[in-house]
Image (tube, rainbow, N blue to C red):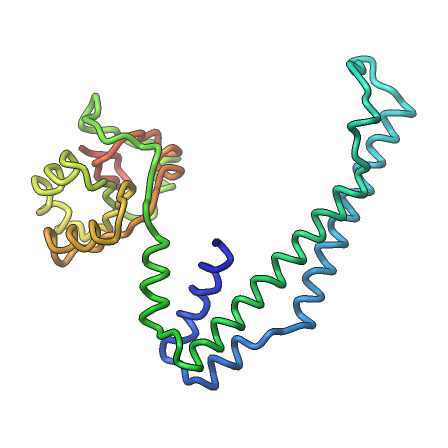
Length: 236
């Protein structure tokens, strides 16, 4: 599924503002380029394999007192070479399959069987649901000030919400401040595109982005939403 989405995203980008001939040129399978890519992967796996073998050999010759053999089962062992070959084969097969799907979809577009609108709908549907480890809750303190290190992480002010009742009430109360700052609104908990359309109807003129910002919030020491984040701190 991920390959199909990557393929569709690529086709959407190509299709906008491009002629049919331009699309075909961009979508043509570059066999030589893929061969170099796969060869590079094979070389990298060979390098890892050699380093692993050398480390095993070093331990076998030099020995380490802190290592103990708990059990040995030759019957259930698999040679490392077989594992590497399986990985190489999997990577190559995935690359070939992705390019095949890309070319097939391009041909369907050229034949008029799939429109750009169809692709847009497919890509949009695969953006949802968006889930997060952040919690929708009232923070212990309405203000969390950042030090210089955390402040440097924040590129610009932004808001994080979900589509739960608490988030919508909070955004309604603070909408004028959000408007004044002109911030992006990240929606980190949303199930369907229809919910996003409803959100944009409730708050027209604002930029809503369906994306989980948990990793960024974790670095800032924030575990909740709704919240307004600026370089100064997090405010609820």
